Image 1 (cartoon, rainbow, N blue to C red):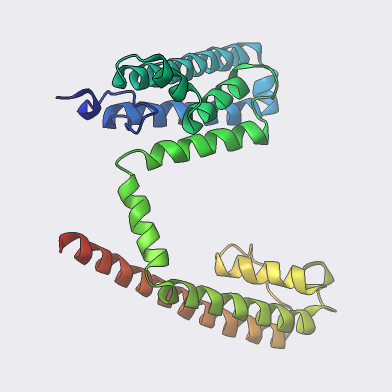
Image 2: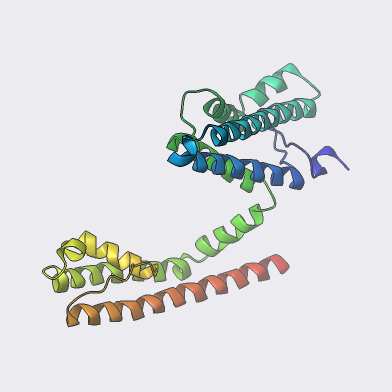
Length: 247
């Protein structure tokens, strides 16, 4: 079995992707990093020396892992080119390599607090790269096909729902602006209500007037139709993708 077919292969910066098992470790370590950052933002945890020490210990382990990961990929890239000096330089200045090195500096050096949005964004992007360079790429390719192969199927229900949401927001604003100015005192506020209705998270907010309730009911029914249409189109595109793969 070649190194690149090894499930524990580190991956490299010359086109070789990490092995299946090693990718799972990367996912686990990245999730532990996010959990560490999330827990450390809790004030009660931050004030506890024991818990803070444990979190710092796990953060050090994460840092060691990503340093080892970077060095391993550089070493593999260099070995793939028979340890030629130009190949080593090219591996170091590779875009993926520079990104990993930058993320390491952001994680290790005390430049950014670990709960910094910039640091979180860096590691979300890093995990995205990792997912794309794994067997999960099949899921990404499937999503790309569903969204872009026949955009009419995907975007028509979404555009229709967007138009309906704005129309509903305008109508509910006119009907309820004097009854509940806090939630319906402007079209943007009413639009927020329509969006939360679509996500079924409107927190029990109900228009006071009969007209407002009728408008809300109609929009809810139309929204369900749009979501059902979008779901049916996604299922149809998914089946079409399976047929292409099998064919």
